[in-house]
Image 1 (tube, rainbow, N blue to C red):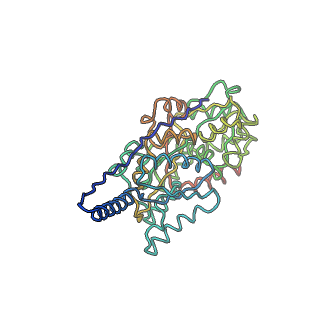
Image 2: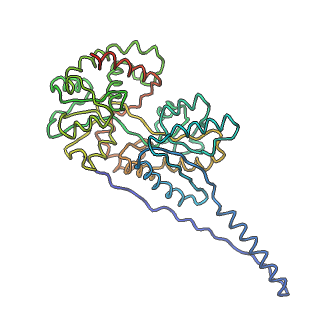
Length: 394
């Protein structure tokens, strides 16, 4: 397991200078009047120059997400004293949906974006907002660093959002017990059969790591472009994958026990009940760093890889502060800011790894290779329902 060094570089210091031109008169009265006029004009100009454009940024999540933005926003404001970011943090489980509803209601009432200029959320919110025509179409013309983002990822969201951080599902295993680590999906399935009860994945409807394990099995033998296809007709090609998952059921933990949520399988790995699981890379790295998982826990990506997913930033189309928001997004996608994202969130950067400092690139060896981004839209719900009836219920 690797450890990342925090990389924080000093930011440029901007100085505001002003030159006061004062005229000279023959009388003290004229001089006083002129000085007063010059001072007044100078104060007005200075006030206008330093008054920043303020935009509202709504985001939700756990404390680590708030800690991230509490670090990045001051960094940005120091570099851009003409812009002020007003963060609005909505803790997980306290109604992030209301933020989306507010943006939509404001649009329908002809009241702009509802004083929300930037919004953080997941893929489903992008898709929903696309149908409601809420999001601004983004480009590298206004956000230069957007060119450093994987273009397939941008295509998946029709350029309606910025993927500023990401996490991949990988294999997490106890290196003291697993000596021959699978390299491919087929090798993983063979390992599961040869080590009954020592592998677990969670119910796919309760967490992304189990969802990824199931989805990757279904698409293993399908064309690569299928992972970006949301046409229901492709469901007829899932039969082989579900037959595989049904067969594996008798070899997984408890001969077919599927824990709830991502943490459920991590707990099994932590207490030694299983030796290998699919898990989110950021959760593994964070819990190893915190001592929740043993130091012997290692991670590896397979070929073809499990899927993962970004967290996105969306700009409401009716925001009146878009120019300021674009500058902020460009900063967020800079290698400097992305290094903070990596260190704080233990996840992948939003930009391609080749644009990151070498030490960051090196830290992801073994986890980043083969990382894929799936986008099958509403088919995910059908997949979970079919898994419940054909695999979990056997």
